Image (cartoon, rainbow, N blue to C red; front, side, top):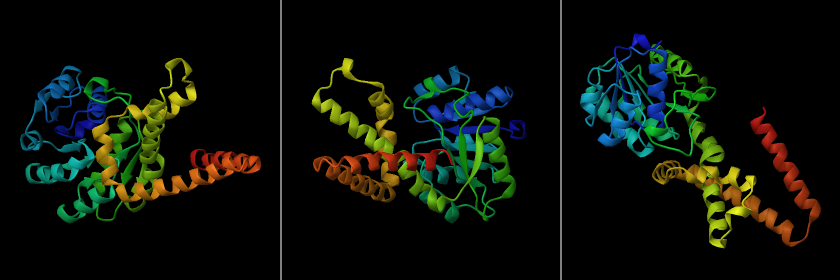
Length: 285
């Protein structure tokens, strides 16, 4: 699939960008990939690991001859980066992003992109608490789901190429309605990161010794080690949906606390039963 592109530019060579570059090069070693970034140090790591071939700090230079442009920057940088790409990339270039918030980004693309739109919003549901090109892997997307925007304004061929791209990286493509995406991700990704950090803070301020930390704590707080700057941006971009989600979470915790202080055993048991049933509906549907 990748050979149809004369060249690829990946803007942002962190974990997601570097991993996609490695996956593309694994499938087509002859593919030329330009890495664009903010620091030469990260770009050199990505090049040394084989995720990109040439590097530049200049977005315009990096996309000038690229037929596929991947915006893998922090969430808060996607919109200004898209504007730079539109001004410098070939008019027939296919552009996609990998941000975990979508509504504002896709709404901006609707306003600024020519029709039919060749920018396709994407959200690969893959990642790690690790970050940086040094942790990139060609297998990061293998077996994952990648949500791809579906909209009547999209160029059909561009969307098909983007879907084929993700499938070549090992992901399963699913259609995405950007109008509900952010509300769902607030509940399934963004709030869990907040609660993982909060639980870690609760244990930390109590001075819990390492030998008393079990797997339950390790599992539920693993993502608290994610990059703080990244999650600051994601939470701010999705602040309204996230605030609503946290309010709902607080209501459930208050309900549990009421059962607890009243020594209401049946209420506590039902709380856990309802939680197990809700998880089964969401995860195993």
